[in-house]
Length: 115
Length: 108
Image (cartoon, rainbow over the protein chains, first blue to last red):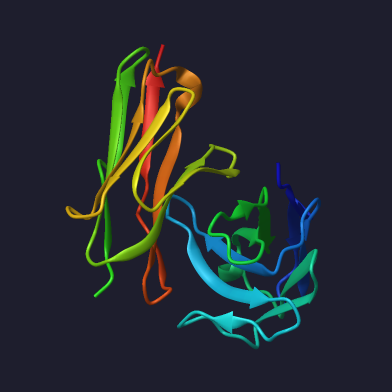
């Protein structure tokens, strides 16, 4: 089946630094990738949708200058949390789909802790 | 307004019981997803429905378009089924809204 990987699986960083999270589709071409975040005991929140080769579409309330998304190829999307602060500590999950299919394949998630 | 409601919020049951989790939505949709999130955070897509019923192993998902309602059933529940189950709805205006999730605990 379709596999999506994320790297790193967890990261601890100092406040003010930038963190890059990678999302890869391993055995299919991901024309669309989604980035979510999840706070403890809360549901997933869609942050942005990115189509390969295009600028990401951010959901209302998500700072595009803080959460930089790049989807430069059909198998890789990156989320960069710039100048991270403790309130950015969260669980970040990506998902990917191909073409017009509805099914999304989820990555295992990345736990970010900003000290 | 696009809305998704999931119930119950928490559910504890004994091993072997038949489990039902419900998801209701406000207006017409193009697809509804059921997902399972394990305690470690990993998410597995269980079903995608636009009509009718789907079955995979002990899991059954149904959707009633007229009533704007979907159910996820687990037969012969097992402790390893303990997880958070989430429904997500894709509305015709392409908006994707997630339910709050149902935390399921199956006791041995």
